[in-house]
Amino acid sequence: MKALPELRAVYAKEPRIAGLFALRPLFWALLLALCAWPAAAWECDAAQVLRVHDGDTVTMRCESGKPVKLRLASVDAPELHQAGGAASRDALAALLAHGTVRVQSRAVDRYERVIAELRVDGEEVGLRLVEQGQAWCGMRPSAACRAAQAAARSAGRGLWAEPSPQAPWQWRRAHPRTD
Image 1: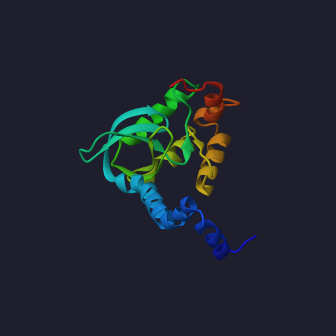
Image 2 (image 1 turned 45 degrees about the horizontal axis):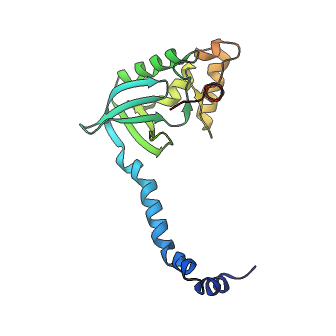
Image 3 (image 1 turned 180 degrees about the horizontal axis):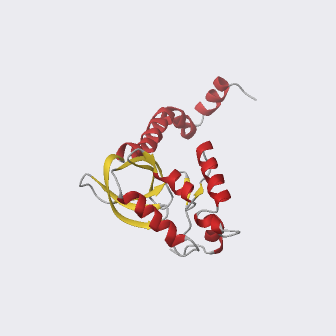
């Protein structure tokens, strides 16, 4: 394999490729700014809940700003038309109704929803839903989430009252979106 200086010399002979080396710092700076934008844009200490769509998706407004659709980070709740979906939505609505909602965004998903951690009076809402048996831990769960899910499952709380509840990702695979 050629060393990096040798590759630059080869690419310097090709003007289109040589230009990429010059743009690389600008590219990374732009990418970093775009990745950081949603997190900076949606940190809110007192968000107003406008609508609870299902057990892990809400529309909120921060200090008279425009409404933003948020999805809870770190959890996956049953879809609204899935068994347990309405109960999960109602549990999320109840948690958000009692206290001050703090939002800290993490990313934006493919449906242009802000992925965010919500806290009500210091308590993480997603973790509380898992403890109640109203949601599964998401991808790469924390130790606390895994413990909460195991406790809810062994106690038969919420969706774990059923012998074999269908995970939301399995339900979505069987019922793909048409929009």
